[in-house]
Amino acid sequence: MRSSLARYAVCWLAIAACADRPGADAPRTDTTSEELLSSVPSGESADASEVPAGIATPKQAELDIAVLGFDRGSHDAPVRVIEMSDYGCGYCRKFHEETWPVLREQFVDAGKIEWKFLPFVSGMFKNSSYATRAAECVMEQGREVFEAMNTRIWNGQKEWKGSADPAPTLRSFAGDVGADLGRYDSCLAEGRRDQRVSAATSLAHQVGVRGTPTFFVVGYPPLQGALPTEAFQQVLTMVYADATGAAGR
Image (cartoon, rainbow, N blue to C red; front, side):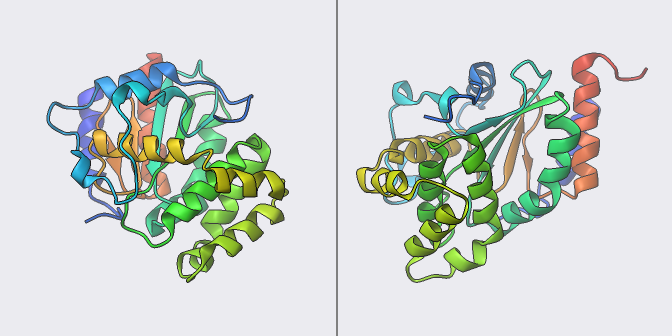
């Protein structure tokens, strides 16, 4: 089953890719993080020169991977997925607008998959670092307000991405979703979430991400690109069946 899934996944690998502390109720994904790091092939990590300018490269010991990003679903789910996306990526936006709502309902909310959303700055898209820090500063205010901000950033990508000064637009988004703007402003001014952005970006390069979105279904080959929703459903259904011993029944 695993080998057939690998062959299926490889067929989609090059499709539609943009290439060439969390809320107290967010579960930790220690096992997921450890397995992701241990699965990196030797020689695949990027050196410091490949990390976008302006992004620090923390030492491995400083990366508390388990608390990076935003976790959804049950930590007891039999399947674990780590999504690495850049807020400036058009295909990432397509995934979040069209495919993610379906996958969330069918797999994450159903308890089948634990999903870690890990935004990072690839260095390929204008104003992405502003959007990522804005999202992180709202994330520190809790799960509900972050979910709303995350959706707002994706849906409003054209507004902030093409702006000469994206900060007011992103601040307006934060206000629209009910974030405390005083806390939001101080978070940005003090750089409270900058280390998280740097760590996520460093991790993406360490594990060899070359295009966005990239999905690490732990235990399987990575999937790159905004796959058609139906294809993603088929892949995750096969993975879940494999993980629960339901394959072939």
